[in-house]
Length: 276
Image (cartoon, rainbow, N blue to C red; front, side):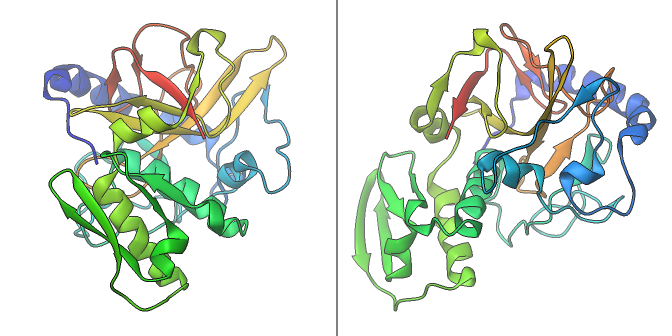
């Protein structure tokens, strides 16, 4: 779960206004009546996507299912958020009925859905902020965490259930007890200075406040320059959406190798890059 960074509020107001002014500029990158990310969002002129290996993390993210063109970002309670100008597409996964699937949780949701889809269910496991590890297969066997402060015990309290509905309930537990701190701590460190970010890399600032966004696609031009599509949820929990910066490259971001980075709705003063 994430917490809004209040001291960035003024900067964000300016950036949201700029995004709104440039929204129409990004329409040229969007192909109506398409339901797959790499089909909906075109790369900038002179840039091309590379073919991703079959069943890879990158292929999964490039082929994320999208809601219909023009769909609104909604909160967990079904209410649309006030800012509908900072996204170009909405990923077609549920938000849930509780205020849980926020920023880091959206990253973990996508990773878990990838492992589920590629039948790598034994690899679905995440650590709580406390450091305790919780596996999907343990949950499916009926094991549940019993949390008291920073103390966590695991005990079998439910019957066995390996369904997708059960898997979705497992994820809510992960969302409750994991967050930006555990994502920054537990994923592999990427040398930001090298700049060659991969699809699936996570830009994260761990803490309270903290935030995380994930690279869901990238494209490259003949000079070797990369641009990236970024997805996120936010606070309160809301639709996972592909962000739109409305700049030179439309929704595609030019991620610097040092210094601050603004990801449409969050200003990272010194982000970390992490990789599954």
